[in-house]
Image (cartoon, rainbow, N blue to C red):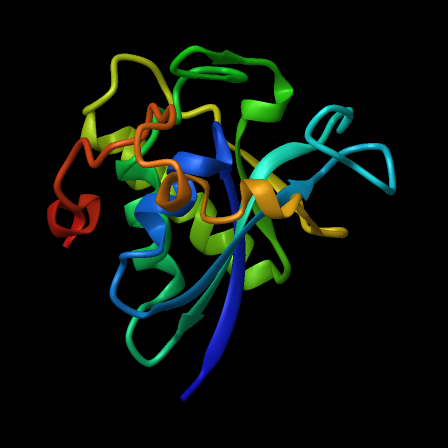
Length: 166
């Protein structure tokens, strides 16, 4: 088994985590903060950090590009610093890459999403090198499983982009 990790941000981490955890090949998810300015971020104070999800997945079952495909299907990558009712850089659409190959695959996926013309505006998802991922407080882990009536703006909006680009 070949285990990899990816860190993605696309609005409130509750909804992202809840949908991504069910993707075949995903073995673990963790809500957290990354891409910001302080070394001890919290839900109340995380300047510049995005609410993100660290995803552990089995590369034998799920490719990085397939994971990105799902990511682009469950949030609006064309709204700058906004998802649903959430506004601010905490809720930006971002892919935090760890290798040049991941960055290249993310760039390719953005081209595929833009070429699909499913969105009225172009993708504004940022590609940022992953520095440190800070796990969120326990109350934010698996939040929608603990609070099934909790807020989310995430849902599966489209079929796979990869099917169209083949």
